[in-house]
Structure formats: C-alpha cells, structure tokens
Length: 515
Ligand code: XMP
Image (tube, rainbow, N blue to C red; front, side):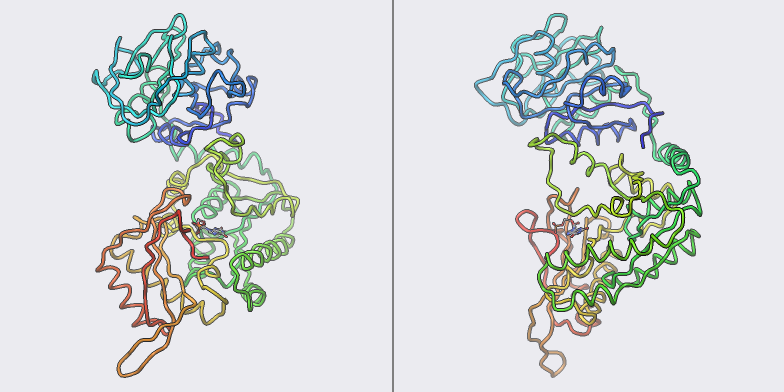
C-alpha cells in the first residue's frame, strides 16, 4: 500500500549508518519520504515520482571497482537532488568532477564557511558547525557547479548547480552534531524542491482508510491483537475502514501481564465495538512449557503454539482473504538494505509467516511508519493513552521474565510485582521516559527477616531501560526515592518476594530481556 497521492522524497541508501535519520528529519518536517537501496534501477527511480531525491552517505569509494553506482540519468530527471557525503562524491564523479582519496580522514566537528549565498544555506550565518565523517574528498567540482562551502581540510565541502537544482554536501546535516542541519534539509525541501510539508497523521489515516476499503472490497480480514500499540493501531485503522468485515483474534497464552485480558476486551469489544475473538489458551501454553528452563526452548514452544491456535481460530471465520499485521518501517528498511551495508541491521526476532501458512494475502498498513508515527496515528484514531504509550512487550511474554521453569504460581508473583513497578513509574512521571520497564523473577532465593521470622524467598530484579529502537539501550536512571517505593511495595505486597535488586546493565553488552 502506498500513499501515492502525497508529495514525496526518495532517499537512495548507499549504506550509511545515518540513512534512517535522514528519513526521520524529513518526516518531522511533514514531508513523506521512502528509503530504497541505491540499486533499485533507473526505471524504478524515475517511476517513483519523487519531488526530491537524496543520495545518502555510505562507506564506499567512488573509484573502486565495486563502488555503489546509480545511472547518471538520475541527474537529468529534472528532480532536485541532494547528495550527502558519499552521495555528493558520487554526484561529482558521475558528472565529471574529480574525487580523490584524501590522506587524512576527517571525522568529527568542522567549521563550514559559506560562500555565494546558496539557497541551501538560506537564513543561516556565514559559519556553521557541521559533522564530518569521510575519508575521500572532492578535488574538483564538475563543470557548471560552484563551490558554496569549505572547511579547513576540504576546499570543496559543499557544491551546487542551481539551474539543474543539484546540490552536494560533504557533511551530515541529519545528525544532531550539525546544529542547523535540519534548516539545511528544510531549505532543500521547501525552497529548492518547492514541497509543501502537508503530510500529517490525519492525512495518513484518511488515505489509509480509503485504500484499505478499495483493497479489501467485500472480503474479510483477520488480525492478531496483542494489546501492543502496533497491532492496536492496525486493528483500529481497519475497523474504521471496513467495520464488521474485520475479526480480531486475541490469544490469551497465560503469559500476559495483570489485567491485560480485561483491558483488551473492554477497550476493543465494549468501547470500540469491534469483533474480538478471545481464545483462552493458557492451559495449552503452560502445559507445553512444563519443566522447560532454556530460553530458546521456551521461544520454540511459544511461537509455534501461537501459530497453531491462531490458525485454528481464523479457519473458523468465513470469507477471510487477508491477514493484517503491524509491520513497521524499520523492519521493511532492514530487509531492503543492500547486503553488508551498515544499515542492514540484523533482526533476529522471528517472523511467523502466518500469511503463507494460512494462504492469506498480507495487509501491512503501518509499513511506511516509524514507531513514534504509529503512536501519533493511534492518538489520531482516539486510542486510549495507556495503549498508545504502552511499552513494547515480547511475544513470549512473561515466560522469558520468569527465569527457570514457568509455573502459574511464579507467573502470579511476577504479575504482582510488575504491576507495582509500572504503577509507581506512572505516578512518578517516569513511565513515558523509559522504553521498557518490568520485573524479572529470578531463580535465586534469598534469606531475609520479616517480623521475627526468617524467610527464604524469591529475588526480583527491576529492569528499566531507555532506548530509541531496542538495538541498543541504557539502564534508566530512575530516582532512588522511586526505586525505594517500588522495593517497599513489592516486598510488602507480593507474597513470595523478599529481596529486590536493580539491573544496571546497558545493551550491549547485556540484552534488554534476561532470557
Ligand atoms: P533484547 O532482550 O534482545 O530485546 O535486547 C530487544 C527487544 O525485543 C524484545 N524481545 C522480543 N520480542 N519476541 C518478541 O516479540 C522475542 O522472543 C523477544 N525477545 C526480546 C524485547 O522486549 C525488547 O523490546
């Protein structure tokens, strides 16, 4: 599904670690953009209908044999092009300039001096701090281009050919280390490419609802509801588009947090009047997990059990042609990035491939969005705050937070403690500042005293992390008084826990979950 009606920018990815950031910056300015690998071919580039093209940075060298290339005709499309770092070198190289390997790698801050009052730098002072990260540099710009900026070590740090609307910059405007970088990108979008900046979540909702209606026709759609923000937004969007033709399947695997089942049923079935089939499969999941302690073994049981239950339920619904899933843009980009490029981040979490198994066509209405955009759509659709700002929750649920064997009793202990952690974080205003926060019930036991009695009970760890995307994370600096409250409440109110500890490991080297 594509929002073809919008103005849009095409970002060609040459493998820079910053490519996604370029997209973020552009979308923050309300311009729709998509990232595609540099080698999608000239026909695709020209039929994309871009209103502006950005060539990203990348680790290559334009003169090497295996240098990532594009067709020189890209510069003849009449579409404005901005080349960043490798993208600038490639533009210069293809249009007849000279790019050389410089003896010294330029990395870090540089002072850019602006010449000639280019539109790209309109409204900015004559000197700008910029972030450089490159080995090669342009020795001579192509004919017809002029130099519009230099730094101490690069005479040609920015170039332009205004009559053809071609621009190149050696530094990275998309990173926070280039303080006025967003203004430069904005100049490219609005002053040079003449874009309007009218892509909003409202317009996304309207165009999605319309195209979902056309796509689905009078067929039926199934959607797995997990209670997380992604599947919730998918379900609500579809329900606005096709109403009763949507059936949501919610599998209670017995591994959910406290109150989750009730919350889901009351929100979707009662409040939004959506068709939700709730399957109580706790016995099945917990039965198969009996005696299992290895984390990967747990996953190998839970994933397939979910598929089994989901398939059985969806087969009961007549006329189903589509399966809706909450795939997000970062997953899509990861899978299109060219092999070996730094933006080809490894994602290990399994894709259940339910669509194939059920022989259903996939609908992925969120495949163009980043996580924070999904949240904005959720708000636009009127989903409750608690759902929109919910922390991500893993598919295997509490099974990977009860260390060792998963039993009903241990799940109950963890549920109680976990609820207290979230409750106190909400009250202290910390819930939305962290990416995830939860309890982990350890397999260690500890000695304590309660009243006059010696106790020998469970240890519970508090895990709270800040993160942008879960690929890396830092432990969250929750204030001591909040931690103190959490600890007192857990030990006072949760039977079976007599000691609370705090996990202060970042990722890497740790992972967010303990298992
Ligand atoms: P780790 O523990 O690998 O977690 O740092 C990164 C993110 O992924 C979530 N996670 C999972 N999600 N199935 C999922 O759907 C899994 O098996 C799984 N393991 C970890 C984790 O909660 C964090 O957000």
